[in-house]
Amino acid sequence: MKKTSLFVALALLAFCVQARAGAWGEEEGKGLLVQNLSYYSSATYWDKSGKVRDSGGYFTKREINPYLEYGVYKGWTVTFNGFYDDLNQTFSNGSTPTWGSHGVQDLEFGLQRQVYKNDGFVSAVKATALVPSGYGLGQQPPLGYSRLGGQGDLLMGYGWQALGSRNFFLDLSAGYRAYQGYPSPQARSLLTFGADLNKVFQLLLQGELQYGLDQSASKQEDSVALSAYYRLVKQTTQIRVRLNDANSFTLGYAWSVWGRNTGTGGGPVASYWYAF
Image 1 (tube, rainbow, N blue to C red):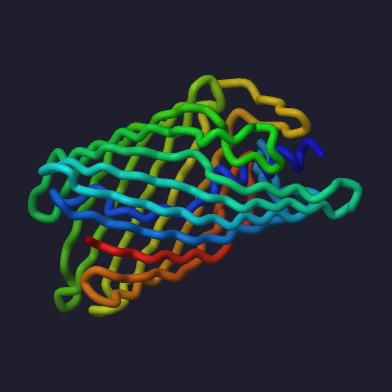
Image 2: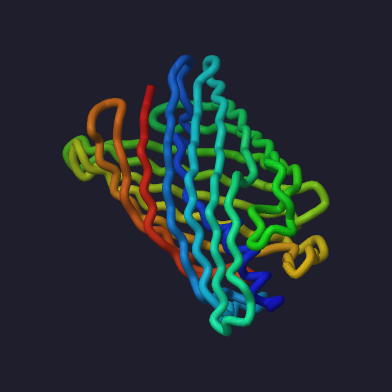
């Protein structure tokens, strides 16, 4: 049961889908609201050595993720990222009751500053505060780490035109995340490639690294064993459909590519974008 608890506690924390304007941020008085929806499922996980193991059941996660960014001043953008999760863990041997929990995960409040912009290239810095919403670590499955935290990021982006004036872009962020006491700090990186297929459809490819640094001890909360770190590479492919200048939506699929101390698996993702 301890291995299953470990899998549950880490799989849900690691697997989410990012949607944002990236290093460009927002112009003063303009904003972007994105409503993300995702479904994740898995019956296996990667252990500490990278071996795939049976979790002893089946884990599912349904997530509603509103994301907002708004340009408050020239070069300055504020962001908000929230998560509402519905989690379920069943056990194949039938001797343990099904686990289920739902609620608001950690809230993320960010401030981003554009520092350079020229000839298609842009760079920015960002600071994010991670605020728990009041849930307990003893919930089964737990909704998060229930710890204050912070993250600092360097963001870089480049946009260009090719193939008959079609728009392309690359956006990269690299950052460091730390929590109050537990878990271990994490190095994080997110790379997004976008390509206009035509005026309506856009291809979005995204790769993300979350790399725990293994600098603190594991934690035990009731029957739930929480490792101090996990490591994960995940990939997301989406098609964005532009309805007009302000409204668009995406459909796609996300999956775990490589990991340590976290779940395998994946699932469909969708989002609705509103620019204002």
